[in-house]
Image: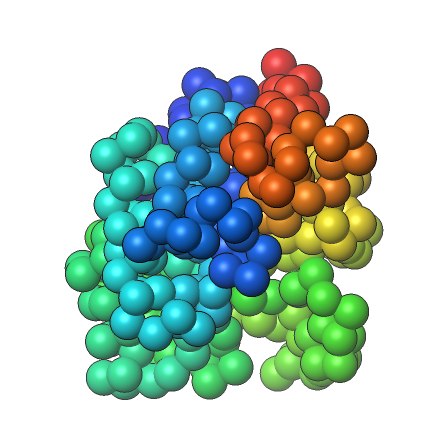
Length: 284
């Protein structure tokens, strides 16, 4: 999928929502846990309930890897089901891989060739040769961690560095500016968290055209309004990820509509629809 195709999908659906599939087995409803493939069955219900409002899905691999071979099988089943449900959907492996040489090549082959993901999140700490193998796959994307939404991002990502010209800048800016030269707007995105919205404006000053994958809306406290205000560009340029506030919306319901999780998918649909409705007004 190229840049324009992704943008056209956003316009067509009136949404830039990426629904995160952080499908923690310890939080699934009891009736789902009784099934042979509970994570997949939960994901299938969430996808069916939210695909009208989503342009992307992002399984976080930790919740699949933790279940061993069965988890990997259910991840594969999930990706295949999304592809069958709507081929236009953009699928991100939230893997946060970061290694060099042949290892990076094998990771890229695993996620792109074997599992048919559109994109992979990457930790760039080891430098360009840990990212380049992911950029060699036509139609696929590298999503480089830059300024994440967690509180401890300040430990490293906001440290001040000095470039070759003697200019002082934050490490996250150095990461983005260097990685912009490795790929292009057609195959490189950056993770920039919603929990520091003013930093999105700073990023847009030197990175105006690339897509940003924005976590941190919902449970972590970020808002769509702030993300749009500081991060949207002329072609949207945003994929806003929302995970728990959609998949597990039923757990926060105070009206007793989902006893023991029965009908959880309706809670997800309602939450996704509300978010997409807010997003749509910024795309008109």
